[in-house]
Image (cartoon, rainbow, N blue to C red; front, side, top):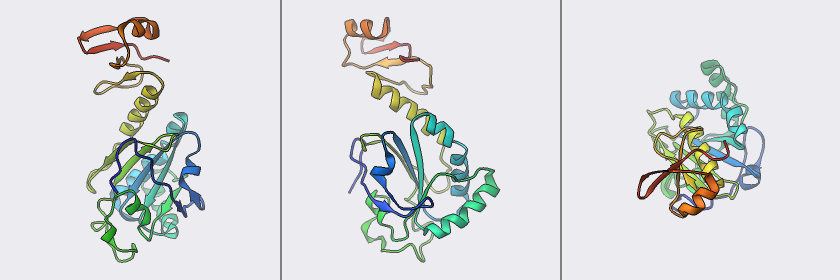
Length: 219
């Protein structure tokens, strides 16, 4: 199954470092960021999990929970957490999902059905496609997906930036331009007439016949 933006994120039950969860129930009424790892005790992932540990508050301020998944058992995750804190200075206080039977990795199309039924004996290279980020909305639909190679650490500041855009554009009929950051001008979507744009945003700048910019609403 290929997952696309606006698809319902597959639901699942799993054991985590915070105990068992049902994913859709765990999401609650906010956003969720699910990010995956090909194996415990891998160097790049160690830095990523630690960096995310330092961003828990930033995501919480945006109404978002974070949760990691690695295709190893939860017992292994608990041992890995000590290494992560030692290397990065950040505790992993968010849940890590255990996926030793590869079911969730397959459910989210990160591994093929032919990958087998166990993480035992598999190397990080065998699982190298389990390097994805999914941003999931309160409606349980996928809002963003990113997949990284094993040798490139993920930029979670970009995930925060994208989440800011996703939340803003869900509330107002606007889009965000390239390199946009919180507080900068936004684009008025084509669905909004000039008259409605004046009513909604007060004023706008017509850059091109099809490109209208205005100050970020709700700021």
